[in-house]
Length: 362
Image 1 (cartoon, one colour):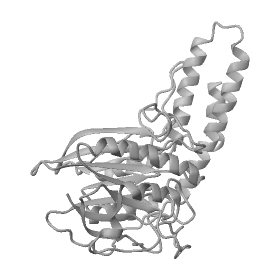
Image 2 (cartoon, helix red, strand yellow; image 1 turned 180 degrees about the vertical axis):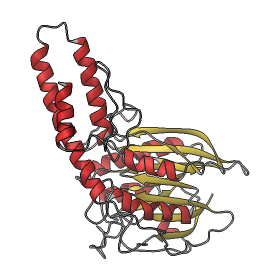
Image 3 (cartoon, helix red, strand yellow; image 1 turned 90 degrees about the vertical axis):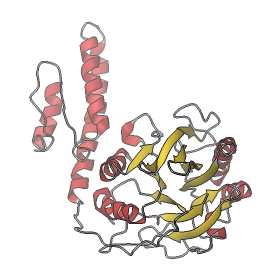
């Protein structure tokens, strides 16, 4: 059975690319796996298979089960290899990325960003290619905290490496299977804030129960929050970040209610700022539910911006109902600036969404 896996690798002539070490008896050791070479899931499934085989060697009926497992693992491996080869073929090094200078924020303002990163490689740009622009935007705008959506493990690895030492991250993935998970993580400046508390809830009827979904949601949906304390002033605020489901408006309405229940709990202690891709326009019911309890920063900012945030790599230039990515605040927060960041570089967009940023006075 082990031989079967290595035959696949040999036929595709990628054994050396995967840096597979020599096997010893029944154990496979991969000391370091590049996410662009082999997906985490295939690795975990293969290790699981080895352990299962060891345990079932004395069982009479292991043959059929082992065959089923081997077929599943073989399919997963081929899919993984295909994804790797496609990803590698679309990698483009953009060199030194330059974008428009970010507006200066006032000394007493806190800068908040929301950024849907687009989870997969597209013909308009792979994650690797687009990440070079995305990380430049984050670095240049230097938000005090920012929330991300559609952040796969590959995106998390890129951001963690790029901003190591500058930003810390909180948040769990929405799925227990790493290949299919996405994070709605919150990043915050390590030099400026102490992390007081944090957590992740699932936007379901049982929000504290991991990996649950309700309301006919296609995917598990989550919200991650972080209570941050300014090291100099002692001022605290909570940044909560989310990504609502993309199919039914009725689903988004119910998920918004779950989100607001958590915000209601958090705002007893601090100001709450909510970022996210809500997958709903300003004329829709879910937006109405949110805006009855929170303030859309672009509507009250002294210096504001208008327009779409989902642009599908520039193929959508306007929409009568406006944005779907928002930054909301609880009452009593002054908003200095709201901006939609529309930067591109060499014809590439960082995502199929524009990131948005708001400078707030806490």
